[in-house]
Image (cartoon, rainbow, N blue to C red; front, side, top):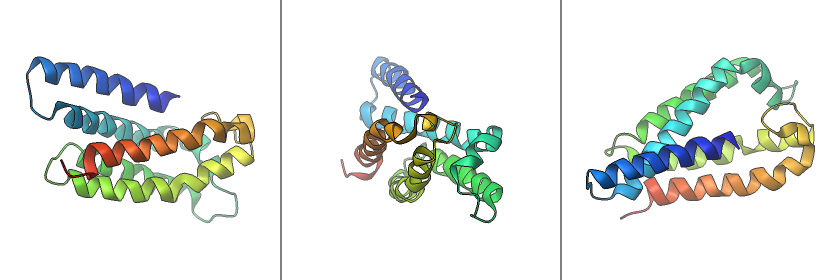
Length: 148
């Protein structure tokens, strides 16, 4: 739920400010700024909340903490890429691949009722997370990847 709050709040404020400034393509720009904020926020969370987030990976996975920190850094870098129009499309394509690649950790956490980010609700969490993941994939494609 925090993901939607961050994304939609930043989008609404940014879109409003860009509309006031009468900037062209304000919807896509606002959408990219909002997604940048989201990914930078979640990337930082990987470090700040590492103890809880590491549980989203099975215990048999070697180097769970380094994987967590590396994915956090990747999210921050990809998020920053959304702020630069020259690399926005590439960042969007890489983000689509990243979101698909990390989704199995959400499934694992939901099926094993990991007490982090709603996963404690077990498989029911996937009824929220799957549509959210599809929404994020659409958002990235619409705001950053597709040609104007």
